[in-house]
Length: 444
Image 1 (cartoon, one colour):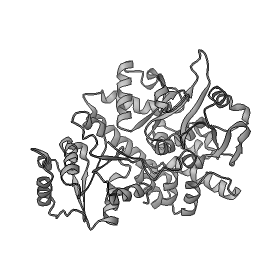
Image 2: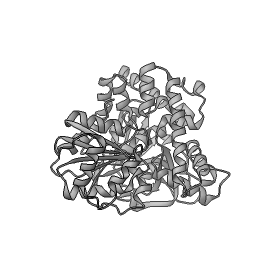
Image 3: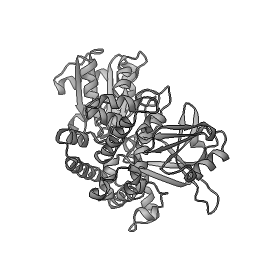
Image 4: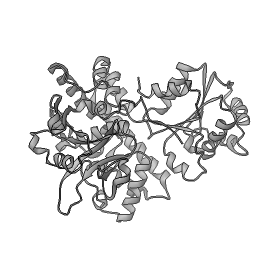
């Protein structure tokens, strides 16, 4: 599958300022596939060291962590030579061996000519128990396939290029086709295995079967969170969040069989595992938005819209025939989709606006920063009169550049009202800054 992250991975491989790279993200989003492809495209050979499967190899990372000694021992264990500049050393499932994470700093300091990539899930749990190699490694975040990548997987390259381009009016036939493909994506989701199953069989049921398997995989991981949280509470909150996408989170709603503190701990751990993503309430008074967030109000979205609809227990027979995604499960599906696209374009921290005045119900679905300017985002259809909350926010905070209204309607600009109506399929393009590349890479 063609992935957008291929570009930043290639840039890392050719950068003179390269450091060891840590690719993070939830399970089953394609991290191993993308690193192996990087090796095939840019190196003579890839030496993959799976630290979850080969736990006896952890002994290589005991002792003083001298990179040349580690490389020498890995050559023996893998029966492969490792040459700087020609070999990609891939430490897969690195969370299983925290000492290997510590070793990355020494590769940067003592063997910078060697290309080293590590990948893992549940990394936050490993990182909190070790001395972190600050300033010695780079990070890239990986997500499920976004809508453009789904179109690539479906062989709709021309459609993908439209979706990746700047939002603008498109021909009515193209508009209808993209909405239909988006509706299909929202049921298949973006998990690579589910997309592959659908692409191979053209059967939604094949994708749904993968969703069930993936949810079970995530649940099996819950035992690895212990003793930090009760696995049963994690399971309950996992499903509870899916039932509350689009609504303010109240821990009592997520599970009725666990105490508030237990539910909150489970919620926080699922966020750390990137299985769910927190959406913080913030006032758009200035940047960064994180400086103006509220600790009392929050929402959440799931890692993937396909997994969301499985956990939600949606009646596919009644929801799939609906032509407008904003009608599907009362708009929650569209809000989940936009949240997924924002997680890629806006980074790990997502925000929305909720007026804090007593008895006020004013709320704007999301906030986004585009080219240094704050925008309010509404995910809804209907006449402009239904945008009271967005209009209120723009009047209250004149520093905001404007508002995007994501809907099934064609693209339209209302500059006198600081509003732009954007088709849902442009959610990623509308919220991506002009300087943004194909991924979020940063130094630690």
